Length: 58
Image (tube, rainbow, N blue to C red; front, side, top):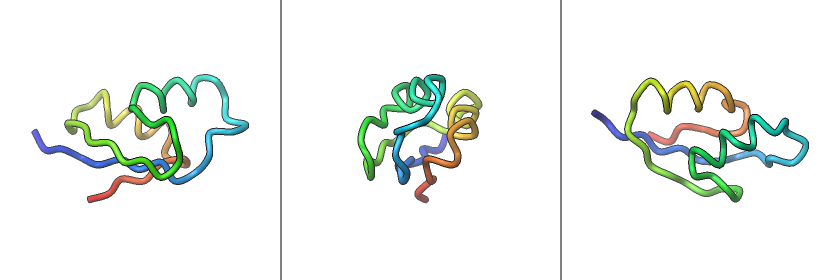
């Protein structure tokens, strides 16, 4: 499978707890951090849930 890089571009302040947990599950704890994950349906679903806070870096 291909790997994708995910970068947090907006703050988690004032986000619902569900979205904060999703960011933690992705490994994003601070702004402008980049993490690398395998592209699978679970990860893509998490990205979709917090798409307004992150960007996918190709």
